[in-house]
Amino acid sequence: MSSNLRSVQGEYDWVDTLGDFFASPPDDVPAEVLEAFAVIFNHDRILPPQIFYEVVEQSSIAISITDNQAGILYVNRAFQNLTGYCSNELRGKNQSILSCEATPKAVYQDLWTSILSAKEWNGMLVNKRKDGSHYLAEVTVAPVYRKRVEAEYFLGMQRDVTALHNLKNKVHNQKALIESVVDHTPMVIALLDMDGKVVLDNRAYKTLMADLGGREPAELILKDIRNLVGEDFETACTREYSIEHHEVSLVQEPGPEPRWFSCSASWIKEFDLRAESYFESHRQSGLLLVANEITRQKREQEHARISAAQALTMEQSATLNMRETLSGAIFKMQEPLNMIEAAVEILKRQEPEQAYLCSTLKQALDAGHQAAQTLRASIPTEVSEVIGPVNMNDVVRDVLNVMAPRLLAEGVVVDCRHLESLPSIAGQAGKLRALVKYLLDNAIDALREPGNRQREFMIITRNDNDERIELCIQDMGVGLARELRFKVFEPFFSNWNARRGHSGMGLTMAQQIAVEYGGDIEVDTEYRNGCRIRVSIPLNIGK
Ligand code: FAD
Image (tube, rainbow, N blue to C red; front, top):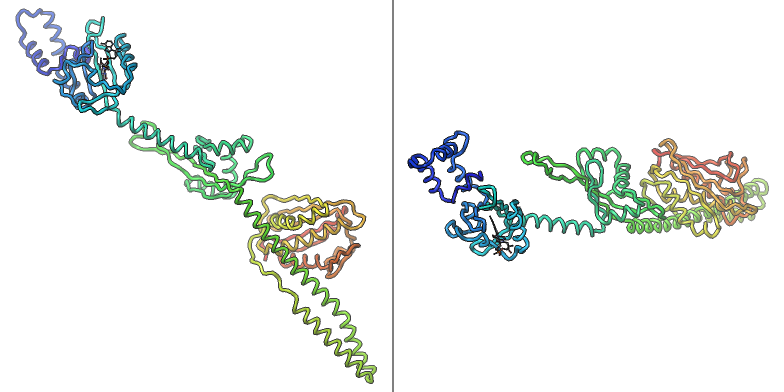
């Protein structure tokens, strides 16, 4: 294009005149010149200059041709439209007519240094239109040679990129704003690609990762969610469902307690940036993971739960003790009453003359029965409690919390061996707490027996083939004689050397509760280092 344009002076008429001239050239035009132009105009593979001219004129890019001092020789229509000047106003003027103080001098210097050393220059200039308004121009200036020695002309091409620049800045501003908000939010945020790799994270995420000793929080959270949700997790991934508000615990090592997070995962679609996706947009998925720390709320909840359990256990203990005491008193009263009743019968039959004595005894007997009846009526009813899923590990933990002051005071060491994921049974937590408390009270009493030096017991919970929950309490106390293993469950049986005011109803009540749940309780006679009691409760027959 350049060799033809070099001869164009920006005048269409000039091109036409040239065409007319060569259509009927004067006689004195040398034959070589005519031959040369015949090649240009007639050769069927070389376009005529008019075509080049029209192409330049109609181009959507603003084009200018200047002399070697940037004096304007030609501008196309797009240039006039862009700058607001018409061709006549520009011709003969310097390109600096568009210059604006917002462009640093150094940029112009760079432009001139380039083009004067025969190099093309590409860059941005802030230009001023005829009406004084500014636009950002993406400019290319290239030297044009005729004799390939020094540039005689310069070709300038430019387009208005103000809107693009605004858009870029807007996107940049929004990105910066979003990044700043995401980075400063206390929530842990990470974006994962389809391979589960973290591609974006925020400050809270990085801090958590450091707290976890460099372990990837996203991996741990997703593993925990997968365990909680089971097969639904794979479905959620395939169908891209969101997973919301799953409570996940992360163990910090070394750390006393786990940290709790409420986690959500949602799928987001990203536009494919490749050119081939212009007409048929392919979008790629990413998993956005958001985790909100709820450790404090969890601790408060746990504290409130323990306090409530403690209050309930105290109330239940008081009620059970009262029931135990009154039942004991009634049982004890029954013995003399039976004897009086027998004496009355003997007197009636063998010594009828003792009618007065007999009547007095009868009165005493009636008064005794009435007193027993009054006692029976005053036995408090059990504390009512709803049935719900109960985890035996929580039950043991609650009872240990309730008994903590006593364990500390007695200097007793408890070794807890829990199975982490113990299935729940349907039952009343309070009743099951009472069962565990009876057994732990006995274990502590056994350790306190005269002559015993060990102060330790162990609690083990176990899932027996997903059919039964087994609770085993073994103490290092005085132990229990083999022949007593059934008798200890009888009401009011007590074999302690130091009786400590117990009525001997604890194991009876414990057995009653185990039986209520379709389970059983037994003393393990094989255990030699003290006493081991096993409680077994079926998972599906729970009350
Ligand atoms: P000027 O004093 O004109 O120039 C500033 C600096 O440029 C000088 O200090 C000097 O270092 C250098 N310079 C200027 N003229 C020459 C020269 N003839 N020889 C060597 N060095 C020189 N400018 C725009 O603002 N917008 C445009 O769109 C634009 N398009 C151009 C297209 C072409 C084809 C060419 C050749 C130049 C173009 N220029 C454009 C540059 C323009 O000619 C001016 O240099 C620029 O506008 C600065 O003008 P000024 O009056 O502010 O400063």
